[in-house]
Length: 137
Length: 107
Image (tube, rainbow over the protein chains, first blue to last red):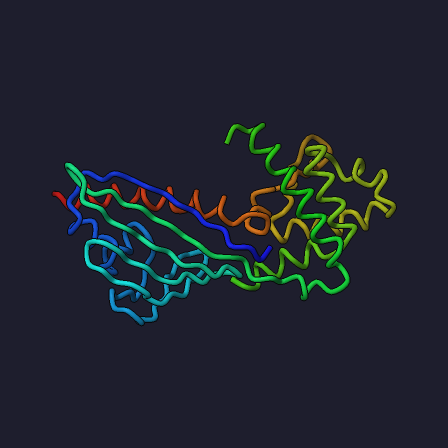
């Protein structure tokens, strides 16, 4: 459960990079599509995203205007880094979003249940996959 | 946030509850009576375990005639198994909202 995993999404947006950059970095605009926060595009800035389901703590890691933005994303037991990469393309911007991280290991908290836990998750992973294909989602 | 996660872990730390949840996942929705068969514990004990699972969002009970049918809410478990599944869906929705915002910024 401690191995690194990542999520990557890509969108071609019919908007220029400077505009996309503003939406990604200005907290009043971020509140519209992502979450309310005290975000500032300054390396080392610590911020908090707030949503009705809870909070995400972050630290700005990289700011390369109109090209690259990266920050940490710590929520629940998930420690990860979110990176946005912008590339100017014909008629707009290619936006790539990548989140890389890992679940922190909580097995020690489960004490005697440890052995059964790993097996249980393996069994359930298979079950979830089966369900997902049944439901076609 | 940590407390919700703890609730999930605590709900699943008990082998009897894990077995009940696993059975609901595998065999689909069913009643307390049916779950009690083969559970090795009494019906009130099964009901108590189901309540703990329900509190953690893992199980949902729906009245069906004279009985309540319980089903597994596997989505509640997905973050423990594979957070990427959750986050990919999350970001996909966020990026939809971002596109909406970008359109409105034109106006």
